[in-house]
Amino acid sequence: MTPITVIKRSLQGAELGRYTGTLTRRDGNTIHLEAPFNGEDVEFMGVTIKRGDPFIETYYTDRWYNIFEIHDRENNALKGWYCNIGKPAVMEADNVLSYVDLALDLWVAVDGAQTILDEEEFAALNLDPATRDRALSALEELQANFAR
Image 1 (spheres, one colour):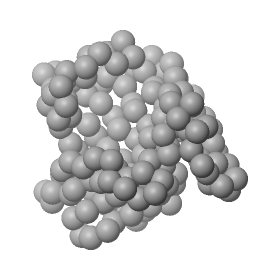
Image 2 (image 1 turned 90 degrees about the horizontal axis):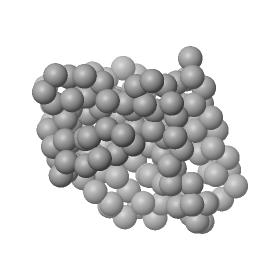
Image 3 (image 1 turned 30 degrees about the horizontal axis):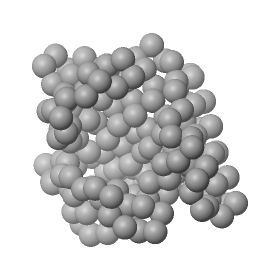
Image 4 (image 1 turned 135 degrees about the vertical axis):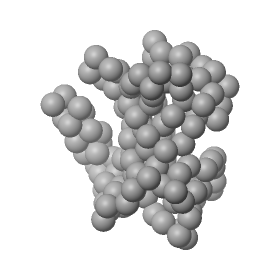
């Protein structure tokens, strides 16, 4: 298993955060990683996300989002999906993946309930119309996929 550094970038390209995951599979435009949650335990949308909870992360080099499937560290129970709207992932090097975060997020609970997050932050970004439209289309695509 290959370690991969994930870098979250701002619209201007500044680094907002980084962590290391493990490459589990790469299929064409799709990159699959597993990374343990490395933050402090936090209550979020009715679930507790704990240090060490496995995140099964899927990045796309041709889609404007990524998806984190969150499991419990103790019993592997599914907690939900956290989806980031952002520009397509880029492999900056063999072991470095980055994406530009566009603030807008989607939480999907285990029961299928969907919550759009950070709409004000997204609205405040200085996006050109084409980028804004791509981001909103990506959100609609995610919502439709999870509705199925």
